Length: 171
Image 1 (cartoon, rainbow, N blue to C red):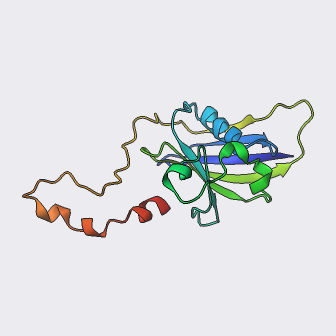
Image 2: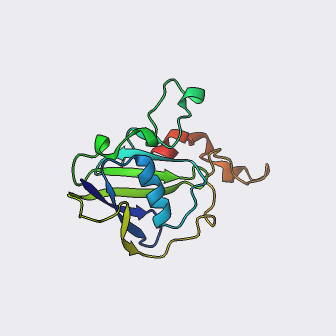
Image 3: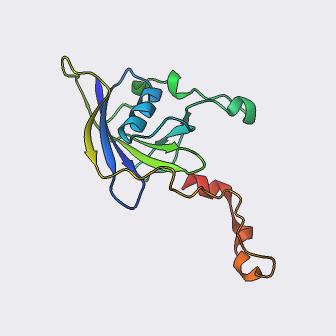
């Protein structure tokens, strides 16, 4: 079976790509297909997150497992999970995050699940819409909650006590 995805880049302008890929290929193959479609180099960490109709992050599918070193449990990684293991219906959704310093976010929507076409090679890019921004021109996400204010400018620091890292990554 073939899964047709629409991958929408979270930017001010509409930028998306449609990709068709075999359901027996892995999330790692989809990861590289997305980067190829947007003409970006695969030189940063990335993860897929299962999602719902409200685009809330669910279970993570990381490129590499860093849980062994930093977390309580190990996760299966992109190269270990075939697409058909997590995708069962048209309309299934994922969030794909690339480069955790710049936090490029893509909305990945399953448009169609269909039979493969004879002689067709997959993955294949089937639609291109919009101009891709330069991925290095985005400002890094500031995870510290710190501001650039001076010590004498105390009013600008209001609200810093309310900073919550979990709120930042869950939105």
